[in-house]
Length: 154
Image 1 (cartoon, helix red, strand yellow):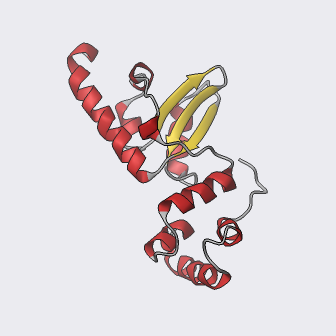
Image 2 (tube, rainbow, N blue to C red):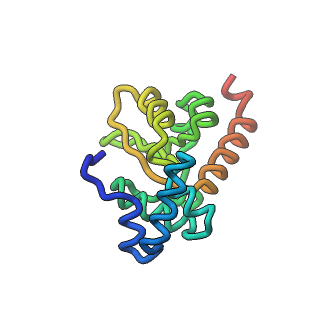
């Protein structure tokens, strides 16, 4: 990821989603609690999740994807260990000549990124950003698929 990326707060102010005072208050809260800035701003009703996702997508130069509108290739997804999908909350969405794309909800989640790197060893790894709701829905659909197909998998 680009080391010279713009800061999230600056992007949100630039887009007119928060003002400088709101940013300063949220940064002070972040210094006290060590929470993610976006989580604080959502909790304090300063921004909505969709606004945060758009800003993070811009900050990390990562596509924002709606999984509920995306075809899921279950034959591809089942190639991954279930704990990778269920525990890491990383959802494999595409394999093409350029590598493997994994959907994540937080581009700063180092544990999730590490697990994705391990699971896609030998392939170029790309990430796509999704909402928490989309991730929950994809995982629910994954569980249903696995439950229906458990006998075939054994």
